[in-house]
Image (tube, rainbow, N blue to C red):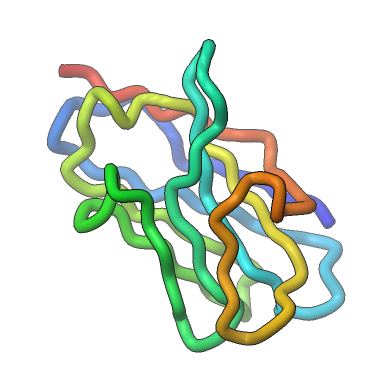
Length: 126
C-alpha cells in the first residue's frame, strides 16, 4: 500500500486549503484513514480520522469546527479540508491508513496505523 499526499502550501491566516491523499495497492476499501501533523522538535500529533464506512469521524480539539475529513472510496482518496487556518496549524501533514476491524471504526493513535504517506508541508503566515 502506498499513500501520496498533496495540496499543501503557503497561505495567510484565515485562508483555506484542501489536502488530498491517494492510496494505491489496496485490495479493498475497508481501510480507515487518518491525518496527523508534525512540527520540528515535536511529536507527530493526531488531527482527524474517518471510518471506512458510515462516515464516522474524530478530530483533535485544536481543529474541531475548522477542519473536515472526508473520503471518496471510488477514488481511493481521503481529504482534509482546512478552513480558518492559523499560524499554529503550520506543520508537515501526513496521511495514514490501516485495515479497519469494523466498518464504523476509526483510529486516533499514531501506533494504530500501518501505512503512511510522505507528508505535505502546510505553512500559515500571520
